[in-house]
Amino acid sequence: MGRQPIKGPDASNENHRASGRAGGRKRPLLNTHRRRRPFPHASSRMKALFVDPRRLETFRVVASSGQISAASRLLHLSQPAVTAQVRQLEADCGQPLLVRTARGVRLNAAGRVLFEYAQRIHGLLDEAALA
Image (tube, rainbow, N blue to C red; front, side, top):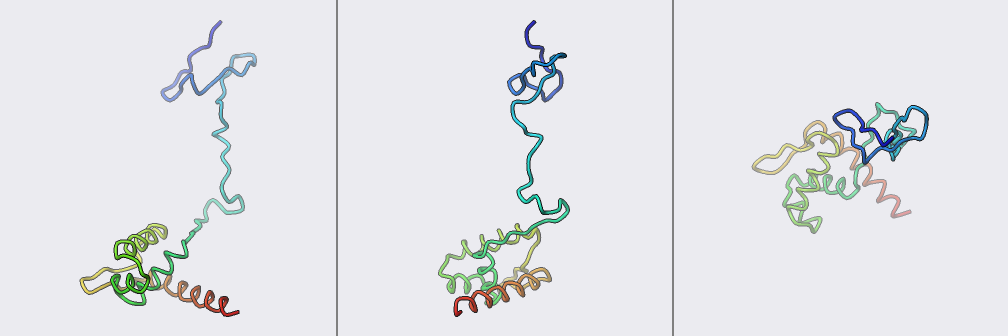
């Protein structure tokens, strides 16, 4: 007796094989149902935020200067590169951090919180460099 087709809309014969057990039960070739979390100690409810230090420094300089063009000169980057880093940081955080105006940028509530952390981290890195 040959292989029986698997019934169902998403089932395909290429991804399954007979288990050799009585009853002809099929099982997947890969263990896709047993994926491990990248950080098993982290709760499934806890959302971890991983921030690229360069993006955080770019955000700190933009927030300090109030203008993307001034920040780009200070960081020796192009304006599109600075804008892209700030937008990527906002995407990582899941919310906007800056209010963009015709005269520059200013921090919103979430941006003020992150800016305080960025200032503290920058100070600690400076302190560690001097040690």
